[in-house]
Length: 335
Image (cartoon, rainbow, N blue to C red; front, side):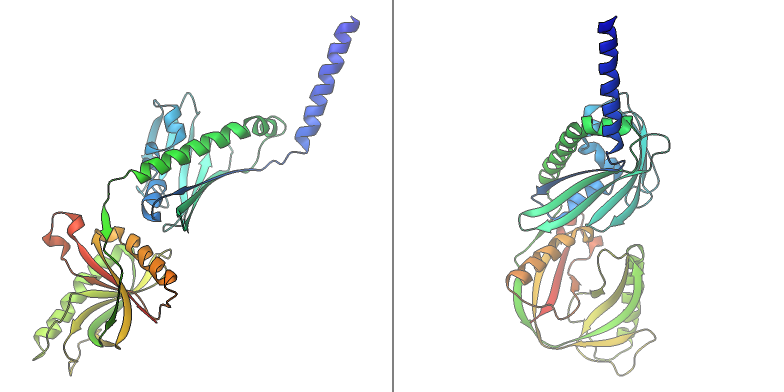
């Protein structure tokens, strides 16, 4: 009997100690893991900004190949939604609530009734490539079981998340090339004259805007004696890539300034100036790779950007079947 009492006292002591220990544990938990990937941010962002693409690298998908996923909403970005059922990982759902172009993706995460957790990716350029930080934030670990479970499982979860980042790195670094850039050129450009139309646009409305703007400028040129197009159709961009709204100026380089302008059309004159430029080969959606290459060159040469970037559309995308044959010259004026 004394032995049983002793065992009981020991058990009560252990339980009491655990309850006291759990009481002082935080009810919020953040798991944070990082890796550097030898890539520009574009393909990494594409892998985490599409929940369907998680199937290619997620450690939870790998731990249960029979996991059933269902998707709704847009394929990419805010509103993309996933639910899953798994005998290994349990059931849950996830929704992208924030997506900042090639910088950050945040998802609301629900793994049990009443939970309000989140998981996010922070994408940063570093000299070695791109650093990806994967954070999962548990908003409220229940007392005492939930808090004690995080103590016991924290190391295992960190290992799981690191495995996912390693798989993401492997997938991204082995993707087939979808674009390429030429060498960065630094040249002195002569003064130029452009006929332009400017508007404030979202990404979705740019294509329609260009079609209408170039058409209006073309009609004016037909009515103007002696005027000629002296370069490829172009555009100036004013805006932060992380902002979905841009000020876009469709521009046609011409040999002279017309005496009379049509409605919405303006003349833009650029001075003789030094520019750094690169030729991008690939779909327009991949052009950020070439922008990063230009920015790296400008930083390394300690130059200063003194104007908005200019894109010159050398190739009409309708005329080629291979996106890698779409040629765009991207330039920054510098000093």
